[in-house]
Length: 325
Ligand SMILES: [Ca+2]
Ligand SMILES: [Ca+2]
Ligand SMILES: [Ca+2]
Image (cartoon, rainbow, N blue to C red; front, side):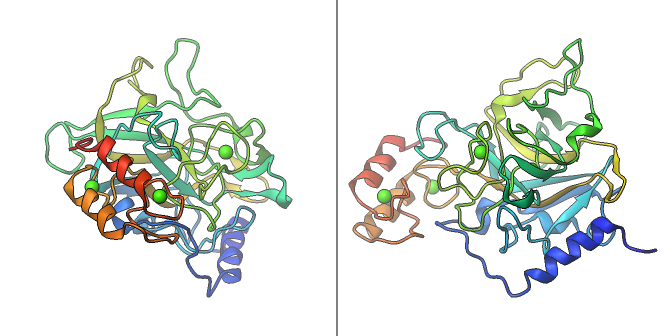
């Protein structure tokens, strides 16, 4: 079978980036990213890119810029396709107004391979996927018959019908090179990545382009959870699984079928958590004390990410002490 034009595009992106090095800024570890794939289907994904769902685990591929994706590590899935993952800790519902770099309290970030077309931050190549979270009601540690799945309801475009029930696929206009001013919000694979940013700092999805120290990608919060059958909000303190599903069922005359590509999925850290265990306690206090006075871009104890471990970080840990534990 001859590769589709879209497969050529992805392969071209890979060849341009051979030899690229990880450049993401800040302190982060593998414990901050998805650690296990439970289920996946690459159906209708790009041939050659839809066979290894393990590619969504760990760090985002190293070479991403906002105008040039790094396609060396991703999993592609079209209509009917998906990937289900879990993490080294539960997905926590983080509070708003605590972390200066996460003022809205986003909980996770999904990294796809969209890119700004021709450098215009109001036009991007997008292939939206919707995101569900699963609550492990059986305590088995794996998605099973008792797992409760909730949609993280996107705000733009809103997928609800006239009765308020979420419905997919989206209309074909949401595939491909299109305006992202105003931004598409609440979908994966719609906001580009910059490898000059911090992969654990959420972008502001409601503002065009990538904000602050963020490496981009698409942020989500448990507050967006709704019941699939009613469209009504569901209150979740935590969840255990993430499922990303392609939200379209359409084709482009040149580039072929729509498909979502994912390179990584990160949990945002609780403010004051220096070791990614989800809890602010003695261990975090000791990290700050041991690193007190040090300066640098990648210090675990630099809680507020200003490049120095000092009183501010110590106070942040003390004020958050016990949270998440
Ligand atoms: Ca933004
Ligand atoms: Ca901790
Ligand atoms: Ca600091």
